[in-house]
Length: 393
Image (cartoon, rainbow, N blue to C red; front, side, top):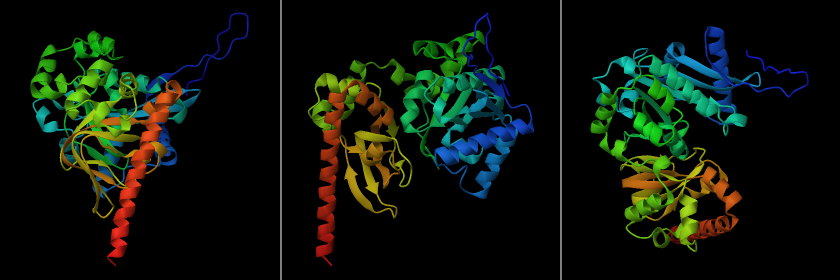
């Protein structure tokens, strides 16, 4: 393991912290990494490692054995780890082919498709530069090996963060894992123009490895919606507000109860760091029991709230806020949220809310008051529903 070194120039100095990304070089280091990963997932995040069928467990074990594992050392301890493999190293499972839409990439050599997943960061390092360092190291390793596209996934709350470093939502498919809803994302490694435009940490790396513009043209022709969609990093307050107005077909101040009593500038500042997700009928936006950190404002389409038995509890259309209980309390979801008609939602994260509390206390009080009114109205509706049920007994 790396040791933190001290500089000496005639006087005592504080230890210099060194962050080093390394690749597991032997079975012992791999076991050390997997132990760290499982410990963080189970003990800190409450996630069972790779649940499901025996076949899925077998596939995961096989990928762990074949994959290249990166880990980062900080303060003489592992601060994060990441798994990387390509289609050349192990055949993608049928589940991966469907979720990542890999049939669209069948004309590319297996080595051109890389997958980085199971990035786990120790709690004390999650808000620092460790995640970016891990991703940058994986980018360099994969691109030097001939990869042109990198696939990964993340929860809705982190879509904006991944967009800021160059990934895009592209497939319309969603993964349901023990971690809850996950959004597949793609990084076009040679799209230097896009990476520079968003000031991605990958831009310099991409430029130095002789990018192929033909790959970028192919992606834009094959996924025009994803290539043309203005990601969070390129969207200012004005453009986002215009987009929300277009989707809601009215001023969001008048169509979203969550924004009641907010001024135009207050509402714009509150949503400036939000991102949006496009969903299809049948997608499950949230699952009962999942630990959640986000709420959603329905911009178009409709969603239903269903209990664990699949019975509908409520239905909501554009303008409604859903998932607010888990959002406020960072607690497990109490019900499923099912998309019943093609929809787009605005994702509100707890990170957004914490920043608003720190920087905009007046806005926070209005948002909390509106959430209270929304919860009170839903409690009233539930009480009336239960009252009608008991009277019929």
